[in-house]
Length: 55
Figure 1: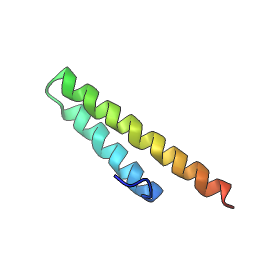
Figure 2: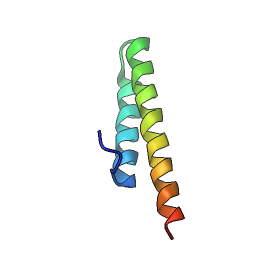
Figure 3: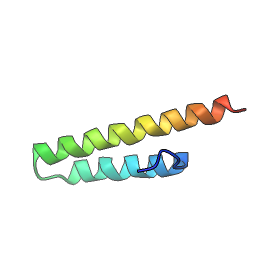
Figure 4: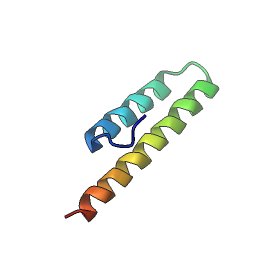
């Protein structure tokens, strides 16, 4: 996955992963979705930080 996604895309991906975690049948799947959500949230924050630094 490219590191050049808009901030909104990271936010949508984070929400989708959190939703998937909430619907997960097993603890292992829930943890995997939560881990991925954390990654997307971090990337979104990083993108937001870079966007603010450019101003």
